[in-house]
Image (cartoon, rainbow, N blue to C red; front, side, top):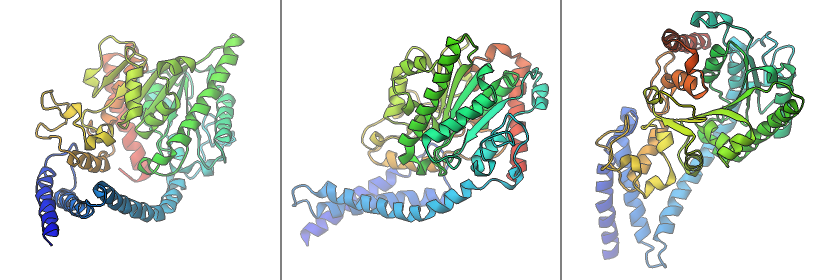
Length: 448
């Protein structure tokens, strides 16, 4: 009984300060109810875990095993509960929005009547990406001469039954549209659901006069946080696509034909996937003739760390457009908010104080001055932060958390080498136009 009382006392002794520490600030705003419950739940969980662990301390140090097993049990139960909803989510993401029910007629788009891609299988994100192509009217509004109709290629996981067949389908679309005759070819790595951000493609289409092509090949229909187990499949998809494009480029060079400038773009999980596919950094970028690469909001961890190290000397990392160097010709760009929990969350945050919370160093933008590192607590706090990291309101661009819309126009322009081609008036006009385009799209989808 005395042992039990002692264990409970120890649990309470740890739970109380844990709950107190959990009341500290977070990187992004939370709903009031979550803010209220988080300290209580975390404190109680730690206290109970300590009591349970201490009860088996006489069994050769199985305390950690007991606590870990308990957490694993909760995690496993949660997984199976979530798994029951996965099929429902996939079905939802496989459906095309009613406003895009009719296949496009533009021959330069996948899913059109001239395309081998079955439009009905593109899924929600594929149809949105294809139908978001910019127009001649947009270019005219910006004061840029439109010389070509842009090419957009998208292949869904449902369009073919293997990585190789999906990549082959994408290549046939690029060749059909003579994409390799264009000035730019942008390869975008989509998120888990197939989501491919149209904004960076919009920028390239607008600033190149439409003399470009964009390609995206998906690997699933689930949101990124439910697609972490597909990173290897996604990486294989990117690698096979890069190899196929490189093979085409080599053949064209040998024949003395024009080759496009290769641009890479990945956002969030898409950034991690693209980096996973080319692990040698600069050497791989050379191998695949990459002209410029922009990776946005890369999730924290060893892959991101490795790429920052491998690209030292030819990369630039910015938190916001104001940090864009005045004169730079860097090939690799990282856009990462100082206060983005997706960027900051990583396993070792549980036991090691990160540099961005070092009390001796200046705080990054949107990192609260009052935020301190506490073992386990900070990890849990930033984990919850990732859930609320993106709060998107059409047209209301926020340079906050994992929302990069307010930064993408200027950073994409600089990263892909278009800065010198715009007047100050056009630079301002591009930001206005991108917001206008998003609002129009949202209204069409009934989200405005």
